[in-house]
Amino acid sequence: MDFNPKMLHTFPSNIPLPYYMTYPGCLGEKQEQENLRDLEYLQQTYPSKVQKYQRRLAEILDKLDYEGSMIYDEYPDRYCLQKLAKTVTQMIRNEEEEMCEEDIPPQVWNNLENMIYVLTCNEIYKRRHGGKRASVTRFYPCGQ
Image (cartoon, rainbow, N blue to C red):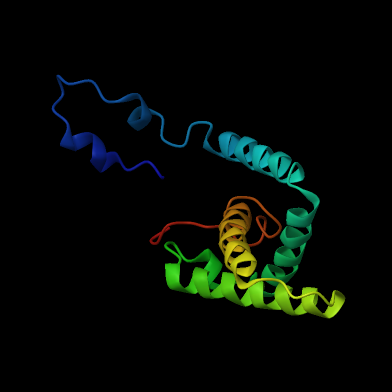
């Protein structure tokens, strides 16, 4: 959030400003990088199968990682995120069925789709706040 001097004029002079309004952006980038490091560390602790899905999802999102992509929208559409997770799940399902001959029950795939949705949101967060293309494409609210 950029500092806007007009915000100061909305408060009466005898009321002190809240701390967060007096130092906008103070340590914001540092805190963001720390959060990103924490997220990446916790992703390393995922079970091996989930890490495999995470890597495959990252490969797929690499193709969607371009200027103007829906993953960089200020408010990504929930339907589009669910459709993306469903598409990724279907791709993983096709790959898994090619590798093994056993039939996997549909309930497992429904649970996998929910997990892929959460992984998708995490990966998009990571890319928007300092991931692979952070130096090229950053998320900024409209008007900046």
